[in-house]
Image (tube, rainbow, N blue to C red; front, side, top):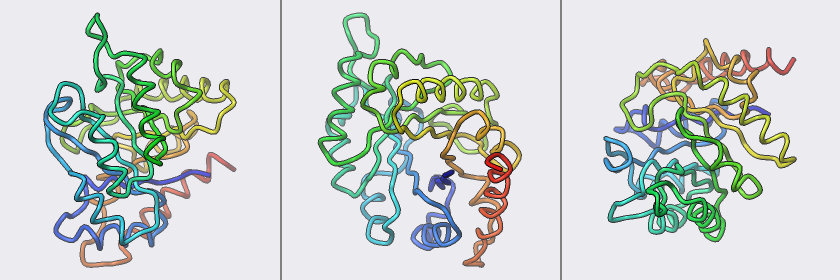
Length: 243
């Protein structure tokens, strides 16, 4: 079953609670929160207080996408339990954000350790891949991860970026690796997912779609049902793939 995960980065923060209630009432499945700290990426967004504030208003899964970690005061060792305590259900991180090995590369052992830490804190664990991130990091932990997130934009920059076409091939390869593993791993795509490309992304093998501007910026702030038609149209496109 295809799932739609609105990213709150594009929501109206002046009434964030209403925005979340409305998108879920319109048929969204997961709330996606990007966490940025100006180290791994050049911008700053969304602390654990945002997650904690959202948790009481919905039973829907909350996914935390950590675009932060390596060489900062609050490492993944600190952030994982912090966001788990705040109410996260899924915590996804980038291999590049873990502590480095002797060659200044992300350590396979540290990636596995963070996956284990996420599980120990009661959450599903996800691994996120930028366009240039090799899948060798996935191969090492594919027996443990619950989510694979393919970025189809540059991580951490402002909204409005265009979909990276090469991401389609990355999705296809990830789907093959997941199928070969025999495990039920979520394959998620994030970055300018919209009405014009969601079917193509699904055909490549994705099952979960992070939607930002294509959802929130198309709605009418004064209409509590403004997201009904947008999500219905997205699902109609997905139905063409599964039919």
